[in-house]
Length: 199
View (cartoon, rainbow, N blue to C red):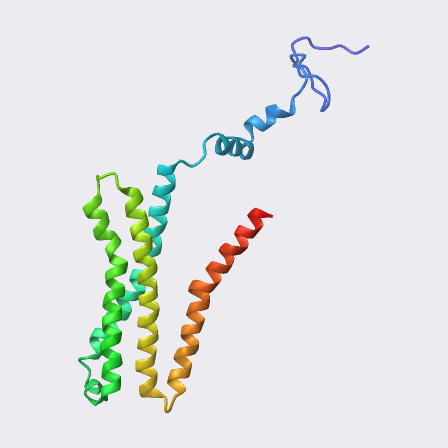
């Protein structure tokens, strides 16, 4: 005859009642599951307008840092070219390309750094919406200027290295590649996402 210890805790079967006599409920485990808790919190607390603007501004800052690094390195290289010995040997066309490239690089630098200046002037003015929209437009314009600066720099260098129209053909191919990667591909992805949402 088996002797049971009255002080021992009651054992619970996987499908049986709990020690307190209540039935096990599946939603109890969901309440402690971080995945379910996070999903419920997200459904109850959607992103508000202020949070969305703060997120967009932080994303713009990160993207601007990447673009600024590239344009600053390129602009520094362009400024140093004028002080080299070979610069005096450039013809009129190459000098024109150089001046155009430097101007484009300066304009790209100004567009990509402008959001920082605008933020300083508008800080504390409760104009985050206007700041984000203006910074977005300036960055898009700065990216166009940066692509043109890179293309002009390539043209200036390749005209010295390669004969004939090979330089122009290569630069045209690189600029086409930039257009596909920087503009055509993102626009295509956005349109595809819009079609998927409507379907």
